[in-house]
Amino acid sequence: MNDAEESGNSSGASPKRPRLAWRPTSPAILLASEQKMLSRLQKPWEQVQVPVGNDRTINTVIMGEGPPLVLVHGFGCAVGFWICNMDALAERHKVYAIDMIGFGRSSRPNVSPANHTEAEEFFVEHLRLWVKALSLKRFILAGHSLGGYVSGCYTLKYPKRVRQLVFVDPWGIALPNPDDVDDSFQWRVAKSSMRYIKPLMPMRAAGPWGPGLVTKLRPDLPHKFAHLFQDEIYRQRPRKYTKKQKQTLLKSHKRIENREKQELRKRIEDKHAAAESQDNEIAAMSAKQRKRSQTLDFKQARKEQKKVHRTRRQLNKTETIRVPPQTVADYMYHINAQVPATGERAFRRVLSNDPAYAANPLLPRLTDLAPHIPIVFIYGLVTWMDIECAFILQQSAQNKIDIFRVLGAGHHVFLDDYSRFNRIMKQVLLGPGDEPALGGPYQPFTSYERFVNEIEDDEDQSFDFATWGGTMDLQQQQQQQNKYVEIGWPSSATTNSSDSNLSNSVSSSDDEESAEPGDKKQKAKRKDKKGKSRQLKQSRSSEALVTQQHHQSDGKNHDDPQSETQKAGSFLGNNSASSASDETPTW
Image (cartoon, helix red, strand yellow):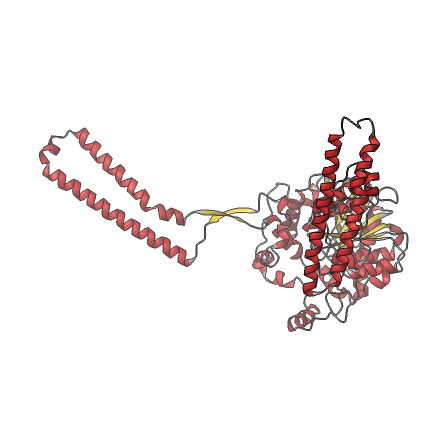
């Protein structure tokens, strides 16, 4: 159910840009842009403005039924950024996506916190009032980037309200690293300007050029929603040529045109000369025949004219290009172009001298978190956030902490690989009880070294047991054995004692060659290869002899199974004879 009362535009027409306004935005335009974003959701949803006192409201989108799940966006984002995840998460949970105070369509009080303590209290207190207004008792709290920092601060202050804490590529966790300091001139200018200039002020100062500036500076963000806006990402435009290509085409056009004109002029002159020599025949023509002759000349001229303009039509051809979804680009501009920029003011106070870190990081504070609250970290494969702090917390805190990594994702992990992110979320989120509602193949990391060095399986992480250390069932063991058999090594389930002797000889030869350097090592490898091939030939020849004798003695010793075993023992040895009674050796 959409909130029709808030639309402010019952006629359905898009709101017009306010006159004499430097910034082409307004709250009504923001509302219309947000409705376009939320219209891509598949399940029914409801949008309300939750009052939090002092004539302030929190913009909230509600979807689904089940245990409550609260989604808190990051800096410069809003509720519309969760449209790739809400349908999937709402299958088993009641999802509440909110705009933090000072961002999006939530209230923007004209206040400016004096320090990081007041700024942190500003965000946490409004979140507490929002929870109280909706009468939420216990819920799962998930936050991305700055939203993760606010979620952690709220959980530290009100631990009885939070059942589970989910950090989605969070900011503000790690402590400043003195060894990782960028002393370049550009970085020093950026750090000093952040103290006096709000981060998104240049976009608002650009005025009518602001919407285009968003697309030019961050063209990657709108493209992350391309699968939901297939009707907007392709556009027709005149084909563009370089200056040299245009000159070549024009020269070709003029050359063809001049040649065709000369040929046409000569053809007409020849006709007139023939007509003057045959005046009597032309005079004898009837009016109908004369008209027919003129029609044929006109058709021939039109045919030649089409050839002349062929090059000109080539210059006017169109091409299909891929462009960012305009709905997403407009939404990004309108949520950040509103004034006053209360959220940016508070965020600037939360920063330390280095904008990459918070003034009061969460890492030393989360060690004192109530141990009954499980914590989940979800990072992208390519992110500028400090990942090692999550493993430090995993070793020092008493809480259950799971750390996941999403392949093919960056800082906006919930957009870059939204399908894998949704599967991980549905696997780890708590259900009605204190256990996850669903199981899944994704196993958390337990060490920072594996997180950095190991390579995940692109399709399914459950089969990469060397990395994840999962528990293999029989089917998975068979798949793992087939994997090594295809490489060339015999599987452990089908090898007999002769195979083990061969593998022992191979392993011993490998140990010897690892100890020899230089040319000796290469010679040892060649000798080992010859030895292996010789052993394989001997074993195959012995098997062939056993098979041949079996066929020869088929009529004599058909009722005596031990005779075949004894003959096999004479060729393969005692160990191989005992195994031959069970099954034939496989390689």
